[in-house]
Image (cartoon, rainbow, N blue to C red):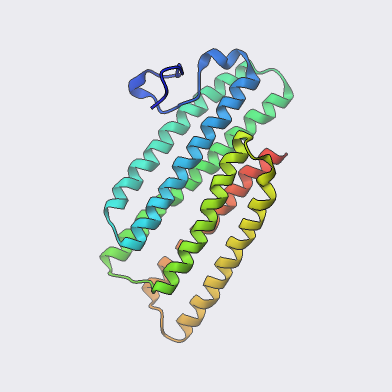
Length: 231
């Protein structure tokens, strides 16, 4: 919950935001800075939904499905409160530069929600793998985890870019994105080899292809956020 020093937009019982304070709307640049901090928190929550999904998938843990559902609902509620504050900041902001920054924040929220929804897709994969008793080999799981770890690193750096803590991270994020693309291509090549040699079941194939495509999509959304911040 928010610290006692921070006055939030909503009463304590309905609060999802941490940094947003209506008293700072009179200073648009400060309000925008607070919005960036809040968006960084939102992104962390969205990425956490995928992390829960990855853990649930590896362990075939159906409890993760409910945890992801709750996490996605929290992200949706949190994002609505940020947008409410964003609209107020836009009304109070007269400069063109601030208008562009506010527009970028709004678009970033859209990307963050898409990332959160990728976590929701993991619920379907966990359910399918558990109910149909599907298995990935240990080697495949290690490669998928490695791909996700790279996206997770991108996420951490993107949070730092959003808040201005690490404006020089864009090159590193680009390198990591290329690594994600290479991982996906390698995984797909090996997957096709396994299919051709009869080592992979068609039921597994559908989950596998969607899974790695979703991890790659999460990386894409992170790069969109970073690109806006760099403009």
